[in-house]
Length: 202
Image (tube, rainbow, N blue to C red):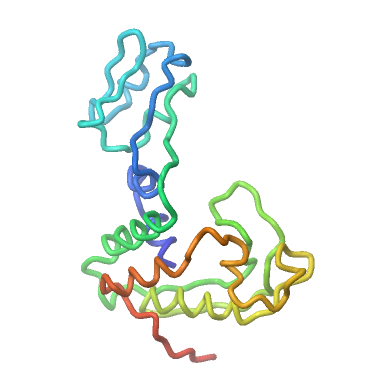
C-alpha cells in the first residue's frame, strides 16, 4: 500500500527522485544537438551547443528530457539503495496523505502475488494462492498484515519458491539483498501508522 501511495501517486519527477539519488545524464556521443530537450524542459535546465548539457543546480529531475529525446541520449540514472528507496516512498506517502487523516481508506488485493515488483514489464508464477482483500485506515498496518498473510501461506509448486514451500519470509527468500521491513519501520517512526494490528475476518 505504501508503494502504491508514494510511488503511484507521485509525479514523474517524484518517481525519478525515489529511484535515483542522481539526475539524468547526457550521452554526448548519441546526442545530435537537435534541441528538443530544451523545448520540453520545464525548468530551463538544458543548454545545447555541441551536445545537450544539464545544469544540475537548476534541474529538478522531472524526466521530460529522457522521454522526449529522439536519440535516447538522455537516460535516468537508476542509482540508489533499497533502504533509501523505501524511506523516500514513505516520505512521499506522507505528502500524499497530508491533511487526509481519517479521510482515506486503503484496500489491498492479495492476489497474483508475483515474485517481482508489479512495475516490471514481465511477470512470473504467483508465489502463493490468492488470499483475498484486506482493508484498513492505517496503510502501515495494512502492509504488515498483507506481508504476514503471504508469509503464512505455503509457497505454490511451480513458483520460484516451490522447492521450499515452508519458507517463513518469502520476500527475503526471493530478494535476500533487500530488507523489506525498512519501509514499515520508517513509516511507523514517521507517524504514518503502526505495524500492530488486529485482523478481523468477514
